[in-house]
Image (tube, rainbow, N blue to C red):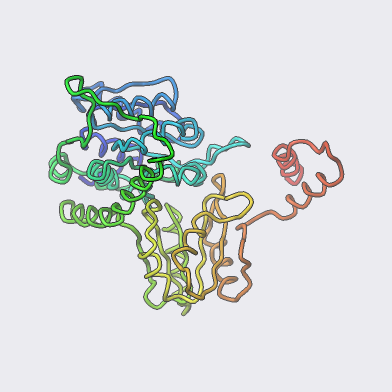
Length: 413
């Protein structure tokens, strides 16, 4: 059904069509509208049978999901930012136990300083937690990825994060094809857990494992992620056959066939990048773009196939690995091992700063002209940074940098 709706509501309606039996939720902006809509659907009886539990914290939300999933229920939750960090211990338990929990993460910056706007710092911090991570380019894909996430989770017995940009997508209203219940039922079979806690057949889960077997257990977690590299494109193809549109998969390339420069990005900024690619193509510039949908597992071969034909690669990062620079670019470099081409890491859009077409035009022009360094911070106010560095050098008790920067910004207005 094509309708004008908010991204969060489209996700909530699609999750409801997936027939979750337990939803554990603790509201945190910007995922709040998702769990609010699901609570309304449960209360009204539209989504049943389903138990909606409004817990006291994000840690409790994931703990509740672990218990429900282990008992054989199809289980869902959503979170963002500090909430994701609060449930970290439970995240590792969920993946280590092989529980097929699906979670939406409305990507948001993490503090300090406090920031509620969008970047990918939260999910990038959990990239090695054992969860599959799928990044949506737009709200249509954000909705579409959820039936696929449940299929993947339950087929592989692994938890899945669907990552959608906070506010940029969650609070945006647009025309979205929300699936019908019959379509989802045709695509997503009833849940049959691979493992279940049964009082009549008691077993232990989460037992202590010593040095003699821990490596093998962790290897099996890695092996299941490698199986996902085959399952993700297959499930996406089956989704296309049922729903009549392409969503999900490992990567999406745009105008890359003859591109000498290719820009790599995750999430909603990919649409802006493609607009700039179109404008530069009209001027004869051979440039393309590559969206990575599956960040975990990372599709090394798919990335290498697309980027291996280019002369240079620009990776647009929505998170910062302090002390080294790029996160996505480190994975891209692994994919391109042995291929000689110029690689550039560009940190952009942190804390919700707009990534404009004008800035991207300047950035891509610099890359093509050979003026781009190995690590670049897009639209960095160097005057503010240098002023704070000088302040820190002058006196040991220079005060908190975030507050100093805010004062400096205010004095320039």
